[in-house]
Image 1 (cartoon, one colour):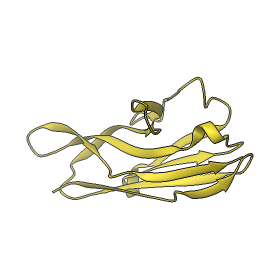
Image 2 (cartoon, helix red, strand yellow):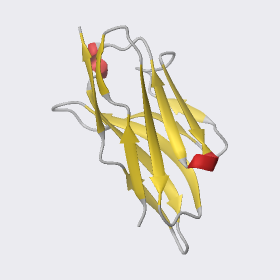
Image 3 (spheres, helix red, strand yellow):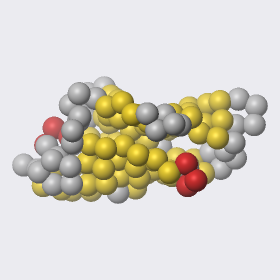
Image 4 (cartoon, helix red, strand yellow):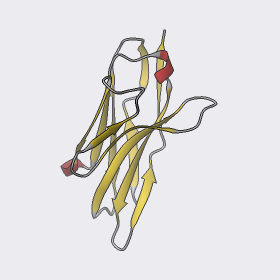
Length: 119
């Protein structure tokens, strides 16, 4: 079975930095796009950043210039470096990946990691 496991969440003061990572494991034949989403209390899940297999990136307007997404294809891992954090960045951050299995391609989600930014 394929699993995505996030790590790196926690509590940080406004203006601070935090890094997240997400490692995919299991019967993986390849990984296409990977991304980070977040869901704040009472709000819908939203895209934060995504990165293609060739490392083309896309960011939500709210995080452009503050967050950086990257990936290590050899480690099946995606990262999110967050800086200049704001209280409104507080949310559960979820990793998402389009994974090539033996006979199909499927999307998988991690269980999420909480990021809390205090003012």
